Image (cartoon, rainbow, N blue to C red; front, top):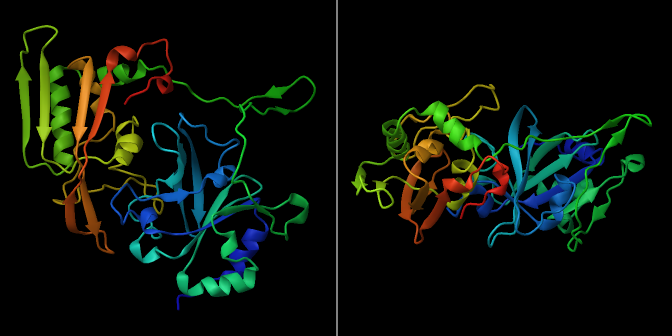
Length: 354
């Protein structure tokens, strides 16, 4: 039996502002191959991260630091509300995160939000779950729910059932220091034009823009890349196609990596050393050629309309993260972008892609 300090974990729960528990599933670890690994959260857990529940038709996210004993992760809580999706997930744990392995299926994940709004995470290994239930006074009924502790009663657990929450328009909460001083929290809202500016600074010519796409294919373990120029001298019907036989992208990677300028997907920050680690490609173990995570946005130099079609290769990995089998997905993902829609007058988040 693996030793765990159950009394210490319980003491942290009793002093937390909000507590959330769930069983880790194969869907969380990515063992099903449907998406990147990340914890699926029930809809009633929104209070753990957000001031208001997600609204269908919109995505919302929050980046948080979670302390896991001797190390921390810079993770992302996200609500997917666009299209057919309507779910919460907790993602961004890094390649060497120890608790999203197949052997963790059946363990209990605990996330707490403290009264100073810091976050801590704990894992109760399956062989210790019975002891945890007995010593904490909690039970399986507390799984997939949140518990809120009142500041004046830190020793009491107060389960909250939020299966049905009326969605109202959220308002900005401000803190009054005195009668005349007001502090407001604001966030950056980059204009859509920033993508073309980034591309202009990074890539100086159309040839280099094509080279960026070829580098992407190399990073995806492609063995062949075909670049075709069609009617290139005829304005209005000219097109360029870049095809490769790489591993492709899942919808989760497209949403959380490809559509995120500056993503550190291939060179994330190591939570143990705070330095960047190089994530080699899964099949041929190639060192990635892409560095800044924004080269793909330079393709606006090639044309105003972009169509991305990908069929992902799904992996089964062993405990060490080595690929032991692959299968080609039975679906394709089709993404279209019209650069004419990215005008200076609109915020970047207001421009939809489909």
